[in-house]
Image (cartoon, rainbow, N blue to C red):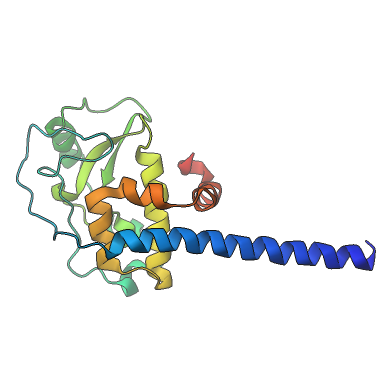
Length: 197
């Protein structure tokens, strides 16, 4: 490659990297604005049956969200943390699908029993934090997975507050998803292509 072309290529690469940083900071500023809003504390679970979903959001009475008391940034940011704390029995799965009126087991790929506040940012395995989330209509559980990865990345980078991220995802994870730049969504989907598409 001629020397002049190498310089142009290097400049193009630096420019592309800078644009990526700006796009990511745009997502971060929009998500940070959501997290800065006053959020109510997580309420206790008030229902165990007759639960209904509100689109991709759970019934707040059945699934208000819940976190491990000892979950800290230092703990959740250790690789393998989510896997080490994941523990949901088949009995609890069946109870939660029944509470939401969804046949168990569901058709393959139609639903997943999801943690409203992700394990990756300190959510726990209690009934107050679990609900059967549909893949369709979108946004569904695959889009929520993107939100979970993004929030963990930002919390572990020190750019988002853990408690604020937990409260916002419990209140309205769709708002977080809608605040993300398409480049962040695409980057996460490419990185985790086996489950995010």
